[in-house]
Image 1 (cartoon, helix red, strand yellow):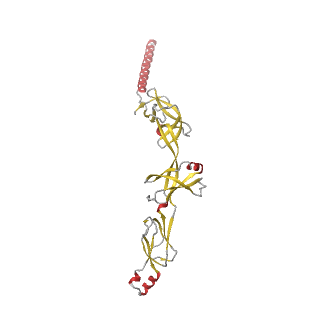
Image 2 (cartoon, one colour):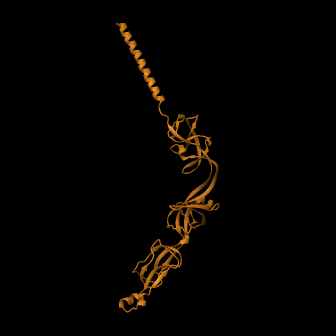
Image 3 (spheres, helix red, strand yellow):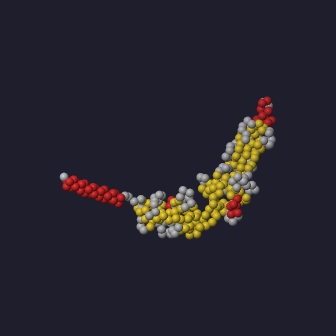
Length: 306
């Protein structure tokens, strides 16, 4: 009986070892066939780049024109509306003299007098800003009828931080980006004799072409060249990784064929799509990960898709 128990016990032990061995083999095979993380790679590039600073600007017409009544009467025709471009010599408003209006009521007026009118003309090319009267209004000499902007006074008021005002004297050239209309080349003009103490900025005038039809008050961006980078090393912004505070930066470089290695870097100029690398022992021949590097441990084997 004791031998029977011993043989059963030994049999159970052997079966247990066999089952454990099968489980380990299955686990090792499953681990071996786990898919590797897939990544996309690129190489750093050596480039020369102009460095620009952006300033906020607003479109303004620096000169305005006012049209006033020269006689007493009633407005009979308004020939303009806000936004119209008016040429020199063009009729703006027609006024019926008060005497004609009085005679019309009595019926003692000739056809020639009935057709008598005082017309206000523009003496220059302007853009109508406001029309302050309508047909039937009674007006007197000096009453304001309309206001307009001088078309050739279109400019951008550019607000430059006080600490950067000294830069403008070194290079006045700039580029003005206009929403929906592209960019134009211009230059900084005079500095205005007032400043914004709240934003700590100094306004400058940047001339815009008179052929440009632009409303006043449009937000603009003015690009100003502040320096140059010669033979700089640049990587795509998507390849740059950082901690939550963005005090430490690194990239994942492919080493030994398919191993992702963490490489700490320091950065310089930053653009919307690329970033300058100042140090980190990277060269233009290195392969760095642009997609798939987030959360990837140092030393991970990867599969390269590009």
